[in-house]
Amino acid sequence: MRIDKYLWCTRYFKTRNIATNACKKGQVKINGSAVKPSREVYPMDNIVVRKNQIDYQLQVLDLPESRVGAKLVNIYRKDTTPQEAFEHNELLQYAKDHYRKKGLGRPTKKDRRDIDDYLDESE
Image (cartoon, rainbow, N blue to C red; front, top):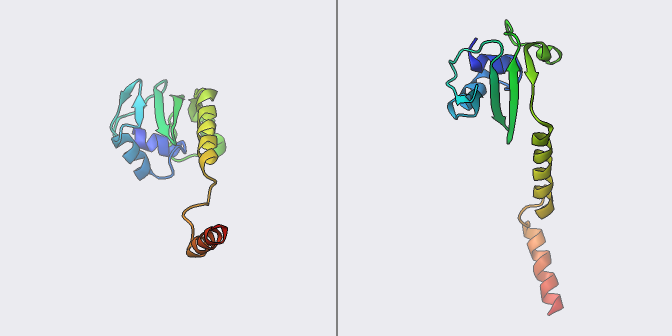
């Protein structure tokens, strides 16, 4: 089975096109080497998938016939991703929130007028 189809069948990517593009960008590695989307996957292969700044490490146990339900994914792969990868991602989220709250962007015209009025009053 092709690597892009395997990643789609085991629900790592929503579409095969997204899985194919990830392979082309070098975000998918089998046994330590970057692969093309057409590379065949065999049981006991070790796959590393970079997605959302996390390197997911998988071991292929079996090949599914087609896309499987979320509850059945563990039959076809063993996830060996270290917990530190997820913790590191959480720390990055906290760092982003520290500098600026989500949803606060540039001031609107009304905000800008209020700021100008406040500055004029204080002088």
